[in-house]
Image (cartoon, rainbow, N blue to C red; front, side, top):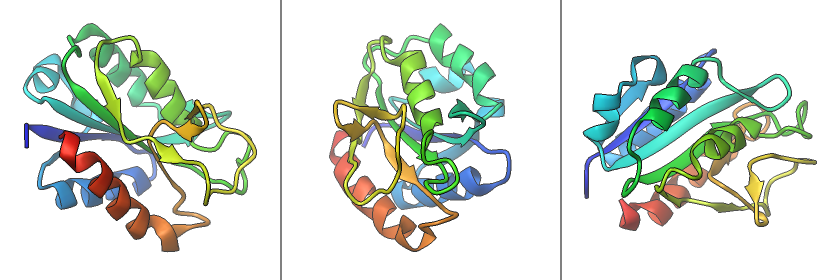
Length: 164
């Protein structure tokens, strides 16, 4: 396995807890996006990016600066997987939209994106994170579907691990 880091942005702590779970299962480091630097990006082949979704499907606030760091870095040859937190009930029309914003900000970077997830099994109305009929990463809902989180993470880790 190449060097992997889980980078998260969290306002309430939910995305941080999920990032720590994912990092623990992968045996890798976890980093708050507030501390992201170009050197940290360069030092890791695999980036697992996590964001919560706010407002009308927007990134978590700290990710706006983090996205600038990623956009200024050389991501060609890197492997990127994305996970996101959302509320499929109260915000069903922008469910995990932050993942879509993150992806759209770096999709043309030359990186390889892995970890898309089927939309079946999720209840929502619309999401910017659905591309070609699949979520571009792992959607998690700790408000309405926390009982599914561990199984979803385990299945996703199994899916992405061969590419890391």
